[in-house]
Image (cartoon, rainbow, N blue to C red; front, side, top):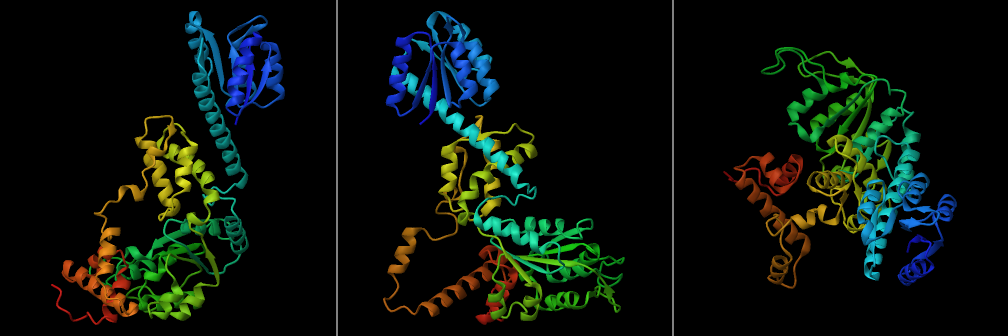
Length: 467
């Protein structure tokens, strides 16, 4: 329902238009000429103006000018006779949204009115969200006005000024590094370095050298001494992303640094003192990994001094319109393109999606839409969701195959044992396909190397022939 101003000095024309629009559920206000319309526009907010082109006390161009002064987003539709269509086109160049030629049908009036009112709603909502972004003032994309995000920002504000070690948990793509950067920015270390490392991206030996540095001759190719990231982050903050993937041996060395502030470079005999605030981030349940023997319990309690959990996007859908608006601006800036609007129907499509990739996936969707769409507004069809892309070739059982497989099982299945047998066979198959290379098997199964190593040991596959 829109609030519509009809401007025409012919009473019968106003009555016809009012009837058409009121029957469609709109609220209609009538003005008998241009001067009355200009007064109404300055005093009342409208969603749409329908104005005649020629009137005794002025013309439609003056109504357009007044509407743009009052609200640049307010659309004006010009009513014109066939003989003056060229003039109506000129009016559109000066800011009119559209024009309707007389005589007209009710269907034409309703179609134009609905389209114009929808655009008004879209532009005003975008303006509101831009204002909300400015009000929140978080340049680090920690956006959202949901209760969960308010509590997250409050916890960041409280922990940032301290030197406490922080454990940030959350699914992939939720923005764990952004939270870590916000903690650093709000700390007394803000003027010093913020260093981030993804522990899952390095092999164990390389990660040790990356974190602690090495001395010349410590290993083949070490032709000079090199400081590690701990030393690079001295008096600053070091983010250990996906620290749950570190080996137990490396965890012991990390624990020493956290306990006494001393590290030992690879190949060195003399420890070095460092002053580093450590922030750990992971998408895994570290307490579960402690129970599985994959993570040291003493290290867990050392790093989990202040735990911060980031909720997945699907649990704070009320923040999605604000995030979309922010990303529309950010992607436009990064791609050096004009800022596009997004249709309400596209927002609705996003609201009905689970977002397994969280905010990172949302940004990818917006960026792809910017690149592929040829329209000024992003349409639902421009947003290709992961669930729409995947077919039966995605590596997962289709629903039909799953039902058939379940039907082949006996009725008295022992669930735990059956699941373990399935897991063992999948690990074994992946190892055979990878010719025994655990890292390759881990990529195939979308597991970490440490997870695969744990399961190989659990199922006694260490000495199984797989090549």
